[in-house]
Length: 375
Picture 1 (cartoon, rainbow, N blue to C red):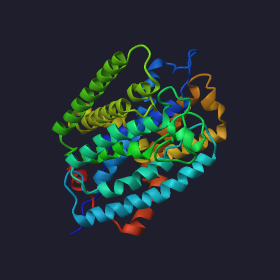
Picture 2 (picture 1 turned 45 degrees about the horizontal axis):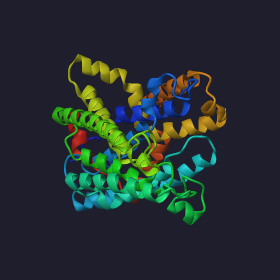
Picture 3 (picture 1 turned 120 degrees about the horizontal axis):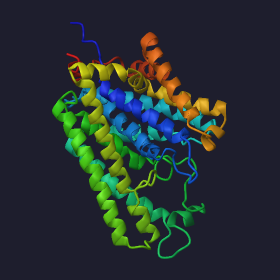
Picture 4 (picture 1 turned 90 degrees about the vertical axis):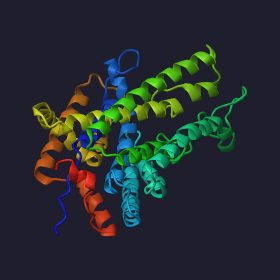
């Protein structure tokens, strides 16, 4: 029997496209006189977009390994090979982008490390994944804060004294703990995404649950943060500040929980609006096609935007005089990805990843959940 043709979850592509475009905003958005984003609501993209991108990587691992059904041992072994191959390709690609010396903190080297950290847990049940992610979110930020924060009035942190680095210490080339995307913490996003992918994402009930849980987690995290800051008083210690603050890229427990809430809500909303069977749903699906095209070839679009910044010069990041450059980047990405998908299919880097994966692990059967979505 000929296996069914593989289809995609359009809501996942939509969410991933929003994550990539959100990183465009974070990198290229204009700054106001106070140094903050202009307009101010652009602040919602800073930090959250990259976290959503990582969360959706976990969802993709889940979809390629069976979706809403637990994978058998053979599928787990094959998925581990595919994920390891992707890490092996992403790491040198990320290093090349880093060598372009743009002001952008390139996520791909850490992304590769996250993929390797996911290898042991691919066959885990959702409850175990959620438990592990919860432990990581609580323990890792606490240990990092204790190691990298001056304590008891000291001038240097423990890691600063051991390495001689300036405060806060960041070990050169470190992608696990002190780098801009610490993989030992960010793997929690992937584990949460993998757990979510084990649900029936084609179900409206699941989609509504994602929106509800995401909203509750976001609000709860905000309330806990405000309560903690009030309890710390007007003059908190450096350690209290590190543990309680939830600003973008603080890598604290509250920030990660808030980002997870946002990721859950965005994914649920994107799945809802792209699976409606009425005229409104079909209209939304058609109107969001360019954004979904960006999501379907997110690695290519992300990498090309780093190269474009290098070609145009770093001033487009450091000194944007308006949001015009950002607008051109977004329009070009939307039009280019839409045209490429319509005529050539997979993006160039996605095609290379798939080729490397299939050359190593062989072609795969489409996941049940991916087939079910479109009947």
